[in-house]
Image 1 (tube, one colour):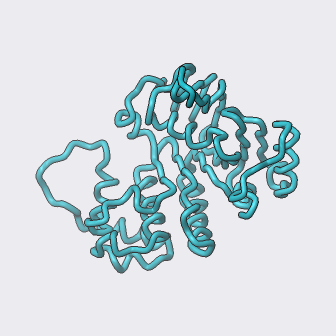
Image 2: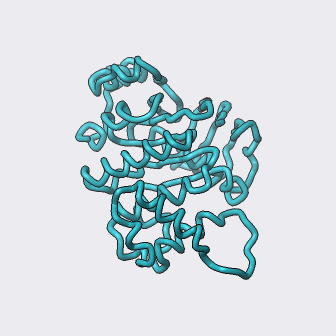
Length: 264
């Protein structure tokens, strides 16, 4: 479902601020893979997601989504294949619009617009049913403005919007990092449920090693713009945080230095 071949990306090339963010990165995801991604600051995690989303062009390499070469495809043109949830809960929703209106926008993404009924009765019932699965009581507040919701509620809604049309690839960029632990756990539960039910191929960046181990069927660790550790199946289930720290030191030759990840 996703294939990245020898991806290179350097920012500010030829200047004193030159930084190579991706160093020949290669990664392949099969349909239905739920891959958690960890790594220190500057490891290239978000840069990788931005490369897949087409936020900027890569310097070298190829990117395929569902066997389609999207390497030179503009961001807005490859968006129809992707669902994405960002770290900031305020991103991804329209604050001045109702919950049901936000969901209607998500449902119509990529379709031609025409004059007609805004939200049909059958749509409204479908939205209510989907919102009930979040277990946040939003199904009873569908006409409320999204700006009135808490950060966790908005993030859960964004997740629902990103997966409403069952994207070929779901990108989660530390989507629980800005939430309190209890709310983050609820959003992760919803993530597991939606990804499992719809069999979505997913890349989830997280700063929390425990979450990286507990969720998904595969875990990769990045360092200096490349994958240095890739584990799945029973081996992943048996992992402990201490194992990941040891693997990082073994693969990179240095100690893991990311306070936020260590404290999590």
